[in-house]
Length: 198
Image (cartoon, rainbow, N blue to C red; front, side, top):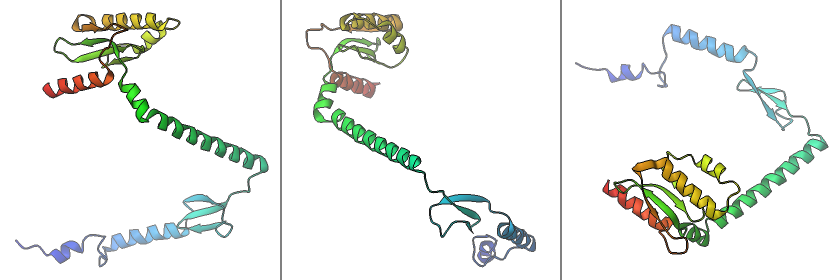
């Protein structure tokens, strides 16, 4: 079987030598007429007086009115606020990602670690009261229940709430507040080792 590549390629509209059937040419002519004679399909705003009230590629350009003094003042105020917000965000980002801040974060110690019987870490309550969990624990409820408690009371309440939520599927390890305990860095390494084995 032979295939005439020339006739195959000429059947595609993207080919510059493509002419098309009379029906296709008629449809194209109607479409061109619609675009050339119909009212504009859309509009765009411009600040350029030379473009005002002109139509290009079926888009009508309209001149925006000159802003009033109040609008200009509101724009400048908003622009200033956005710049201040950007500067603040950049400052906070630098502070939170500084080597000292990262070291402080990774040095936080565990108050209690809850593991599955196979050794997977299910949840951690840290000495600062923060909680890490893989799910199944209503952290919002713990936070609401802890309103008004001291840090020590909050930590004890959180530890009990996590133990209750996980039930008998969890094996808990508790650490003395005044003695060294596993840090976030240690816990992260333990998790990586567990998932490599699993």
